[in-house]
Length: 336
Image (cartoon, rainbow, N blue to C red; front, top):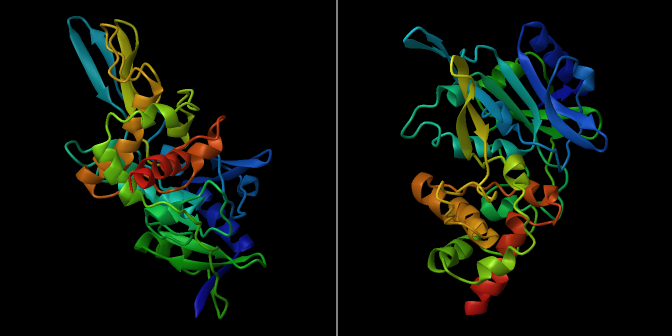
């Protein structure tokens, strides 16, 4: 028997969490698109399983702008005060499987040579509820990187839309079980995700080509559409480049961490004026090499979940999938 929850029961569960002081994050409609936001009113949330949300749930674990510590000068001393701990329960509901799948990919990064308590506290205190995909679009390629429309990686529970105002609930972890304990009813109904998106390229073959073609002129050719805006990195669930700066004055201020992007021209610009990645082709090479060679070598997983958000958000319809397709056709298959 499966476990079923109605939409109204799901809303009531989240209302109870809000009343207990928890932070609830859900998709909120913004015109025809949805954006993940913290909510205080469950009726503002959109629980329709969808192929696209404008942002990733990544920012609720690794914020765009985050204070690390503050400082104040007292005479000849400087007093440092650490940022407060993340001390609230957080529920993230409505994520796509390819979005949540980024979390276990990023986990080892934030616990590698330095234990990042900011990220780790949010992970430990957050329950992630995903919706199995009911459709995909031309930008999706989760199946090419080991994912699926019903992938449970990174999820504490996954919901399958039954099309009648109810969902099948499949708990994945103890946190998921606890969230829905006593909220579901037994049923013989079973949900299913949509068919996996098709991709006619092999990522492992492309990764092998990248290793051997660092100086290929193909990088400049396939990157002609890219304008270096960095939008792809800001919607990507796995991109994690950041900069740290001090804000304030000589007497007091704070050190903050801000998102950054390797696709922006100033990312590697030296004080001397030299830029080792002075063209968009070189920057695109770094992005693809990081996702499919460098990161897998270090952490044994691709730094990409095949969500397609990069190309959906690109004004030039560029992104990881179009680049992989071009490298496959003009690089890998051209050499065969």
